[in-house]
Image (cartoon, rainbow, N blue to C red):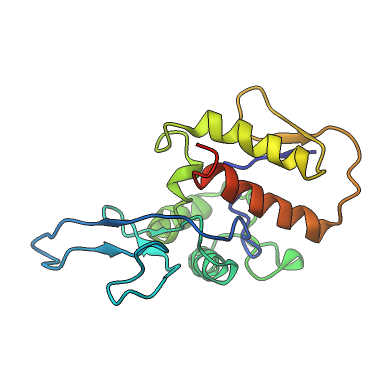
Length: 194
């Protein structure tokens, strides 16, 4: 069994990560939006000083930008909106797996049109989990796999760090594996190992 971290957008149960990440930023104002886009951080909080774990829209595409500290409920909400859009545009679904399960084998013209029509709703994964936006991705990924093993998951990274595969039998429950994955992702990609 192979686990792909960089391709983890599983519709319905899109539980990737939780915890805290220190991120701040602001967007530039445009003619359409005279106010700068502000991204709150857990360090500085919202403009009112309160911590926030919100999902901010990507400034260029309008797509929701997930963050390392996005809650499961936030992620599920945005994946639900995307799946609903695909369904409404005629993409085949797998209802036996759940209401938001998209049939990834559907390559029909209708499915391609639905994917194109709903592209603006497809959530962007946290930039830390993208090799193109994270210059420390390979180091972070190695730290992530090391953490998983330290916590008892027994895995080994694929040669290109695009995922991992089990390296023996794990004694961890499914719930514990999810906890370990989340905490190791935050530890490795959240900057605590650099």
